Image (cartoon, rainbow, N blue to C red):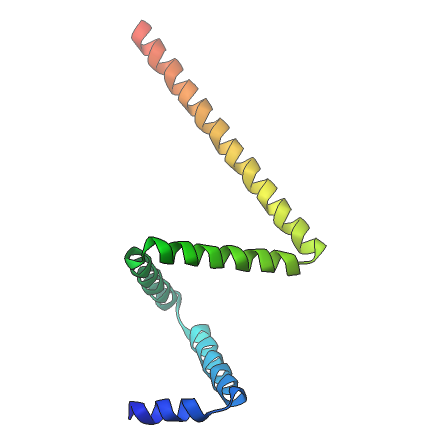
Length: 124
């Protein structure tokens, strides 16, 4: 049974293969469009778990290769991007940095307030 499928796939043209993959992708989109939020969360949790297991088993060399491929794809994506996309990405990075600094300042203020009240309690 499996050998028949392998033989059929070996003989199919690239166009036939792409059509089959496109059809499979379309069915997946339709299935995901109909799923409930609970089903979606479950599917994503399973995917995340599989990814964690795969990464836990990979060697240092495999990890480095995976990260290098990710970095290369990011560079290619940025190279293809328009000025508008670049500006949007930089704006998002700037906003994220501002939020991070704000959280640090809030954390420092919280620590200073706690220290003040702790010192006041000790002095009383």
